[in-house]
Every structure is written in C-alpha cells, then in structure tokens.
Length: 150
Length: 213
Image (cartoon, each protein chain N blue to C red):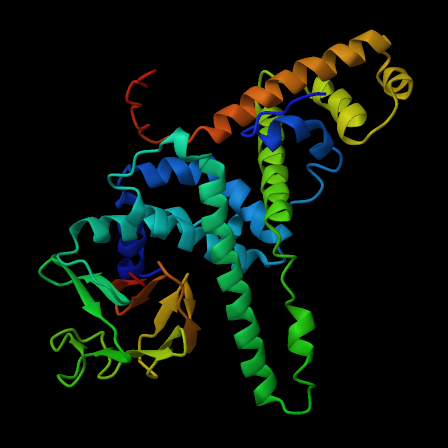
C-alpha cells in the first residue's frame, strides 16, 4: 500500500497531466492592462501618504497644497467648483460647478459626470457614467482621483 | 495631447513605490488574468479583478510575513482571487439586469445564462489555477533566450500536442532518444520555473525551534 503525505502538493503530481492543451487556452491582450501598473503605483503612493485609515469607501486625491486627502463617500459625494459640493475647488477654472458625482447604489458606486465642460475620464475615455471598482483611478479637470473601498 | 494630460501621465509613470505588492504583480499577473478568463470573465473583467486583488494586497501586505507552516501561498492567493471573480460575476449579472430592465421586450431570464459563472468547486478552481501556473512557466521557458526554438517545438509537439515519439522524431529528423531527452530536460526546467513562481517574493516568518519530548 502506498502512503501519500497529507500535505502532498497536487501540482507536483499533476504537471504532466496539465500540459496537454497548455498555451492554447489563454491569449490576453496586454493593451488592456498597459496602464494598470502605473495606476496601481499611483494608488500605492496616495495610500502611503493618506492621513487617516477609513473603514468605508473613500475618494483619495492630492489637493492643491500637495497634501493627500481622503474623503469618505457615504451615500453620495459631489465634486465641483461651487461651494455646495462635498469637495470644492472654487478657484480652479477647469472644474465645472458640479463636475461629477459618486453615488452608492446597492453594493456599488457609480461615477457620473455632471455634464462638465472638461469631462471626467476613466482609463483615458470620457465617461458619462462608470461603475467604480476598488482602485479605479479617474481624472477630472487635471486632478487624479482614486476610489478605494477600504 | 494637451500639457495637463502629458504631465498627468508623467506623474502616473513616475509615482513608483517599490513594495511587495509590485513584486507579486510581476509574479502573478499572467496567472491571475488567465484564471479570470477561464472562469468566464472577459478581458475587462479580468483586468478589474487583477486591479482589485492588487489593491487588497497593497493593504494587507505591510507587516505580513509568509508562514509556509500555515499553508501554501498559492491557496491563500487563490481564495482571494476566486472571491474577486465571484464579485465580478455578481456585478456583471446586476448590470445585465439593469440593461434588461431598460428593454422590457427581452426575457429577463436570459441574464442567468449569459453570465453563468464556472462551477464553484474548490478542486476545479485549484486545477484551473494550477493550469495557469503551468502555462506561465511554459511561457517563461519559451521566452528564455537560452531555450532554442527547435527544442521548444519538439517539446510542444510531443508533450503538449501529444504526438507520438516516432512521429516527432521523424518530423524534426532526430533520434527517438533525443526526443525523450528533450522532454526530460524541459520538464525539469518546468518544475524549477514553477517552484520560482510558487515562492512568493515576501518576507518569510522565521520558525521557532521545535521542542522534542
């Protein structure tokens, strides 16, 4: 009777059986991830400088004084030039009065551009609405924002 | 491209923090993407899972010490990625329902079939993960300048495509014995490569000496 160690690695015994068909199964278009690493580095940098650790979803960005700010999103968050926004950049002309909004919907967060003059961009594409994933980086009026679920 | 966008891209490119997560990104990127595609996600969904996994690692890794006694790193990472894949399928289903609600002529039940996730069985998940590991190891061997193109082609024809030794020997004008030698040599390299891929580039927890009675 042969004994097999309880912690025997199934991979070690299976390499040859996994080989037939290998290399034919996956073809990933690398252009889909060519900006991912730089985005991740940007998020890592922001996270390392973020002042507070949150327990809920937040938007992180570098403010005009170069300090990193993390703003909790809650049910919704609006960004724009007008003072009635949750994040306001009153003296930046490129920012529209109500530039974008993030709204919690069930378990998801939806980024919606508020018909801004200069647009909101995700992965280089101008968007009207976009379902945010943890770590998404987007741009509005020359400012980069990162969405983190925490 | 305007100046603002150029400087933004430059900022993205230079904002580098060489942390553990980045080493893991290089090591596991292809395996995670491959796993996601095999679990039925499209390329955009796979990218999202890779991103979410890395963000999670970024937050978990500071202070993390890999303890081989507690299990294989592969299983820990697989559980994490499989959870993200399930989330991605749930998201896709919800988005499809929203789209279907907007078009009431379409039968809502179509949404279930169109994004049915692969069987959620841990053995099947592990096998898919291992398949990805083997494929990435093969790709690394294939890309290695030390690997002769013909050597890899012989290995591919015999071991991967499953042709018989006499057929492969005839096709490449080799002795049958040489075909076996190539198989054994590349299998050994494959095992070494998999070992490298399996060893996470993380601080390893030092074991305290065991006391024997």
